[in-house]
Image (cartoon, rainbow, N blue to C red; front, side, top):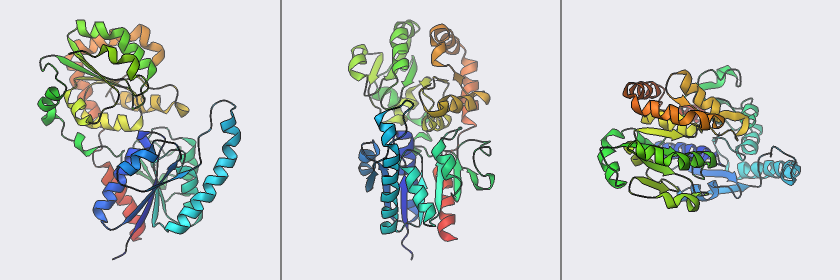
Length: 363
């Protein structure tokens, strides 16, 4: 039996790392004696998260371009050249059957080097509006696995496969975990629960909003699970009380989703895909500080399907309390949003992506 070898690259944020790990885990189920190697960017979170998941990782000296003129930008050509050279070395030594990129700085030079060496590559694009790296890589890629419709304007149509984004499999059946989740967080089962998600590092503007609105929530008999992020925990932990749970990071995402009735969230690609499976009413507050404003575009794709509410950061002061109160009082609207967002869920995304990889090694 052939012993297959796979290189995966994705990093910078959890939204790129966790899909890569999910794909590796699924490949491992199908090919138990396969060899795996991850390639990431030095000093980024993948250098910790990937070994924690049980995989070897090598780091490239690469970083993204800043929006303003900095020393980092002046170093970029040197870093890119170094990363391309190192990627060629890694590929020559490891001899992978397929190289898979899930986005992030390191996937650019690695997939470029793999394509030049004639090794099949798969690009997994999580967003509704691709970044420049994946647009460039798509020209040589063998398959482009996407999570949104209508990406033909960015990628070669014949290479696009609609698969969805890999998500945690423990989110598939959260309804059965509600009682356990309420007990875990010591919440009142008779009150509505608001879940606030700002990402693993946190979202300053969302945290400011929740601080301002906290008494308003409590006066409406709403209890809150507030994930403020690691950068902001020291600042906001003082609000921790019986009906406000302030946490920096969430290990059991299935529990917080199961306990929640309404969710406020950023609109990163992985979060959006998870929320489709979870099927709760969502108010998206996209980050305006990401490349090409892709979070707004991700959220808009759900809003267009009448599956969520979108509020821009610039609208929060005037709009938020009105929108939140109206949603809280309107059970019909909550049910409608839940039903519509659930229609967009793709729970078998990981298996679909792996099926495309398998086609390349079996051809």
